[in-house]
Amino acid sequence: MFLEFFNGVWGHYTFESDKVNVLIDGLPSFAYPLGQLTFLVLVYKLLVHQYVKKFLIMSPQDI
View 1: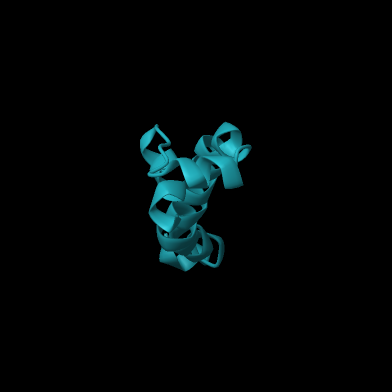
View 2: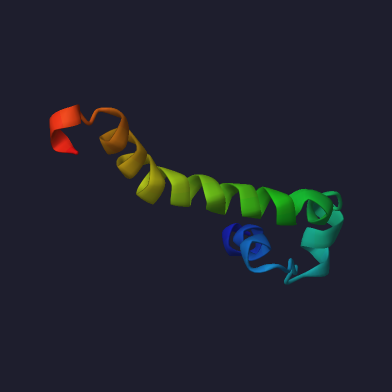
């Protein structure tokens, strides 16, 4: 279930069993954008946020 959710990051979403399809039938419609959003948030938190914070607290002497 966890891995299928993040398959939306790679551009496709597949279920392994029909039972899961029946249980969460509405999930595929928003799983792809939700996976993309989760991926972007993780990338931002891990990479971009550090550099933005460092840039904002930079003093003129650092330039």
